[in-house]
Amino acid sequence: MAGLAAAWQLAEDLGGSGSRARIVVLEAGSRVGGKVRSTEFCGRTVDVAADAFLARRPEATGLCAELGLDDALVSPGASGAALWSRGRLRMMPDGVNLGVPTRWWPLFRSGILSPGGSARAGVDLFRPHRATPGAPVDRAVGPVVAARLGHQVVERLVDPLVGGIHAGGVDELSAEATFPPLLAADRLSGSLMRRLGQPPSPAQSPPKPAAAPRTRPTPVFWSLEGTAARLPAELAAALIARGVVIHTGVAVESMARTAGDGSGHGMWRLALGGDAAVLAGITFASGPVDATAPVDTTASGDGMGILHVDGVVLAVPAGQAAGLLTGHAPVAATLLADIRHASVAVVTLSMPTGAIRSDLVGTGFLVPRTSTIGGRAALITGCTYLTQKWPGLARPDDELIRLSIGRHGDVRQDELNDDELTAAAFGELAGILDIVGQPSHSMVTRWDGAFPQYAVGHLSRTTRIEQSVAELPGVAMAGAAYRGVGIPAVIGSGRAAARAVLRSLDGTVAGRPG
Image (cartoon, rainbow, N blue to C red):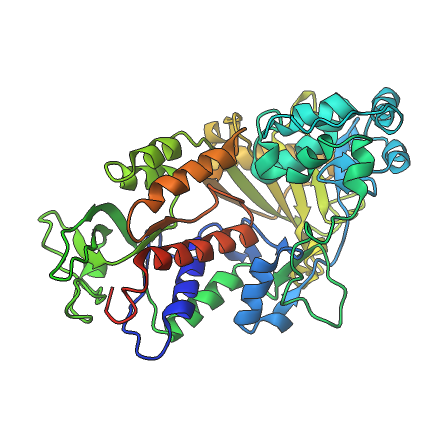
C-alpha cells in the first residue's frame, strides 16, 4: 500500500503539462497491495489481514474520494466487542480509550476486572496526581497505565487492544508511537481516566475524512463493498490508467549511485531479480536518453535486470531496506536492522449454522495474553465474527469466523503445521463459544515478520533513519516500520515519501524520463 500510495502522489505531482517523467512500481510478490489481501473462501471473497480502516484518519478515506469510491464505503454491520476474562466473554465497557477506561461505573459493571482491580482503578479518580512536565519523552504503555490504574487494567484491557493492534506487549511498546494521548494526559495533573475521556482540542483533532458520506454519521471504521483489498486493486488500476508502470514478480536486489552525466546529474542503478521472462518484458526507461528502451537483462551477467532512475521510494520491510542502504546510509541501515518484527497467523473457519450454541454479540472478542483456555496458555489473540461484522458475507447455511494468532515472543504457531494450528485454535474457540462438531472448511494464512515492533524510543529512531536517508539524493522511506501500521498511516507514509523524493530532486525529473 505504501508503494502504491507513493506512486499515486508522484503521478499527481508530475502529471502536469509537458512532463516526461515516468513512474514505475516494482513488486517482488505476485500481487500488489502488500498485507491488504483477500482470497476466495467458501464462495466468498474474504480479507485475510486488515479488513477495515479508521474513519477518523483522513488518509484512506481521502484516497477513496480521489478514486471515486465514496459510494463504495461500507461500515460494519455490528458494533462492540468482548473480552475473554475470568472464564467467560464480557462486553467491553463503554468509555474505553484504547483499553484505558474513562468511566469507572461501566468498568465495574463489565466484570472484566476483579472487585479489587476495579477498586484499584477507581483510586485514580480521587487521589490527586501531580503534573510531571519533565517526564521522559517516551515510555512503555504498560508501566504508565499500571502506575495510575493498576496491573489488571493493563493485562485485561490495554494489552489486548494496544498489544493486539501491534502484535506486541505493552510492557515494551512505545507510548509516544502507539498511544501519544496517554503520555500527554499522564504529564498533566488530575485523573488519567478523566483526561483521556475528554474530547481532543481542535488543534489535536484530525481533519475530517474527505470521503465520509454526508448522509450518514461517520462510524469508527470503514471498508469497501466486497473487501478492503479492493482499495489497492482500484488504486493499481487508476495508476495504470495514468501511465504508471507496475511490475509484479520483480525485486530490487541492490542499488548503487552512478556518476553524474554531462549536466552533473547522477542516477540510481537498481539491480533487479526475478523471473527472466518478466524482466525481459520490462520496458521502463533504462537510462536518461530513451524512455522506451527495454531494461538490459544481461548487463549484470547473472540474470539480473538493470534499471536507472532519478529517485527511489523504498516501500519495503525494514530488514530489506537495511540491506539496500548498507554502504549508502550506514546509520539508517543499522537502525533499520535493529527493528524487531512479530509473525502472526490467521485461521478462517466456516461453521455450520447451529453448531455455535453461544450468541454471537458484536464483531468478535479479544483474548488477553495472560489468559488460559482449557487449562493452557491461550494461543488465539482474537476472534472476528466475519458474517456478523460484514453482512454481505452472510449465507443461511454457515457462519464465517476468523481467528488471530501470534504476538512478538510467541512462536508457537511456527512450530505447528496448518492442520495442527487449525485444530489447536479451533479447540480454544469451541471451548469459548460452546461449539459442537467441526468446521466445514478452514484456511490458514501466515504473515511472517509482518508487524514491526515500536519499542520505546521508536519515533526518535525513525527520525534518525529519515535524517540519514535524506542525505541521499532522491531517496525516501515508506511503510509500516516507521510511523503507523494501519492502512491510513501507511498510505500517508507513501505519499509523504513521494513528496520528499521530489523535494530532494528539486524538480529535475519534470522534463526528463527518470
